[in-house]
View 1 (cartoon, rainbow, N blue to C red):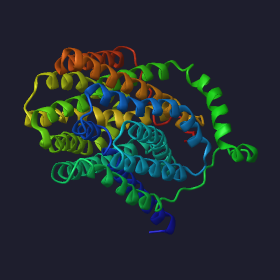
View 2 (view 1 turned 90 degrees about the vertical axis):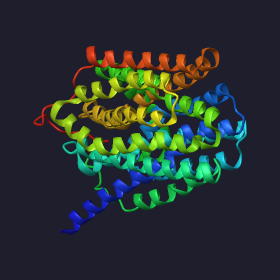
View 3 (view 1 turned 90 degrees about the horizontal axis):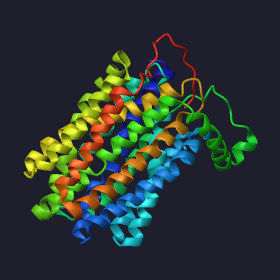
Length: 415
């Protein structure tokens, strides 16, 4: 094997393990926060509000964050900074579970998360190119799902037999091997448009100004607007489902809830790991819409089942549908973005723009579900979430155009 081939193979393995360990670290946030804060006597409304803080922060950071990642020539540096921010936020959760500290931790985590996803997608595009991007994104999603599944099992055990607090210490610890994997990735220099030295000295200022200008061009693309609406409705339906179910399980079975929540994460993650590579290949062969329709249709089915299922074991099986929708969405979002930004230098900015839709939908989801659950009960909240899923599926079926181009189409873009 030549030196360059060996370096490429090593970089791809490094990217595999980076996805694995970054997902490990991210698993500690979300449903485990709901269990942890419920054990600290927080109300459903208060938990929904603090979860919304993180998504609001992510929304505010998406466009400048995406533009910064576009402007930075070293995408690995962006991943390093974001990973350290996630680790620090986990330590704050573990050490100070009070309202102000938890709010600050959510802000820090939201900022770090809005950098991680676009930066890893950009590294993937730079490493393999557009021709192999679908398969590479499927592999990313598969390793991330395996990481989330393994972490959820470990966190569930520790949350049940040690303490809910231990989950966040482990979350911070798991960032470290991810950063070691990042150090093994070697990327070729970009053959794309360079950043002028004057602009490089003020990357953030350039990113903010350039981001505003480029956003106007992005939002003139009808396909992006339609996909953004689909993304918003997807997260309006999806984001609050498991936290709402986790809070209900905590009130029913008490200390065993961490283990049930862990199983509810592990099962869909392994489903996701198993099908994601095939999802990427299918999207390249059959187009993006077919995969999106299948993934989105799983949302209302899951919501309706969660509304009527009270048995913890059955709840775990219902969560298998989450693996289907998560695999479709996880692979399709960066893949559709790569389609929409072909021939431009706005890959990460476009991901940032869609991140606004993700954050807005997730924020509405947690606010809406928490308020409806307190006023009318959890079953009604699940019906409302399922209705948003129906709307998302219908929009994909009747309005979203196919973005996949024939393999012979010209290939030119930078992440």
